[in-house]
Image (cartoon, rainbow, N blue to C red; front, top):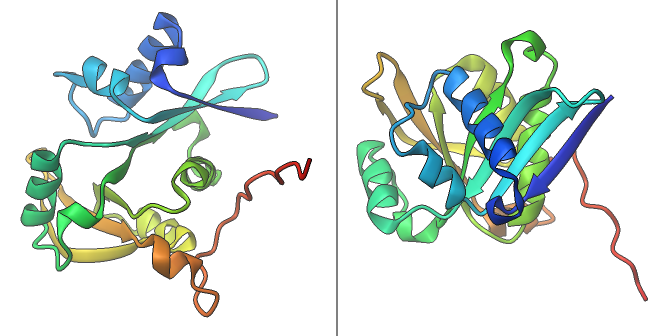
Length: 183
């Protein structure tokens, strides 16, 4: 059994933050420079653990600075202004021993419940596996692939909240938000 926990970084222990950072670095897409502070500045962190407490997956929702957003959108030659997308989905990493089980899709779905009414952007490797599940959560490629500086191309994905709430074309979401109490 796998257990997801989502916290504000300020509610995490120092060890939990260190474990999150370690798994992100092991994922290989992010360098360690400045990562500790960026994790502390995130909006929400998701920890996916086995029943015995082993951390096997992480992900985050972030509110990046306007200059960073502008750079990403410019690099991708996006057709939409970066000011319309203030939330970033990122650091979605699953331990190598648990990959291929749909856990990234689970992480993304659970995090998006915290950004239900927000436009969200994400960047990731130009990879068929990613493209397969991104559309399940309403993400669409915008712009063109661009060099990451690490030997592979990145792709900008956008998830428009208004389009996802449109009943004619709802976003598929595999994880549902728990029902709220009516009392």
